[in-house]
Image (tube, rainbow, N blue to C red; front, side):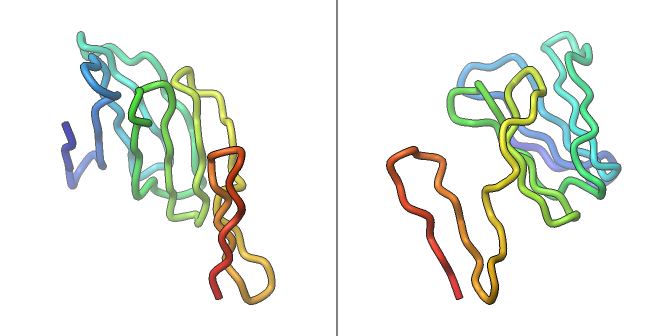
Amino acid sequence: MSVFDPVGGRSSGGGKGSDTLLICSNDGRFIILNKSARVERSISAHGAAISSGRWSPDGAGLLTAGEDGVIKIWSRSGMLRSTSIVFCQGGHISIKPLAANSKSIRVR
């Protein structure tokens, strides 16, 4: 399920067959709700609005992208796992792959 609420922000479901909902807000927080609409987690994630939030396919983690220019990977429990996914280096943009065996991609 993927829902867009122009007042509250964006939201998406937590993986295949999941009973959780991810809500990303304009104040930089993301909230995880359970099937009873109870807040499981409320995390201050970014210094500006979160423009996108997505669960991993297995529902074990999630990714947020904020208007602060940062992309972050989180565990389902709300622990920050990585912020060095996309970064600038000189005149290049480097994209760090999540697969351990892969090489970084550089775009000019």
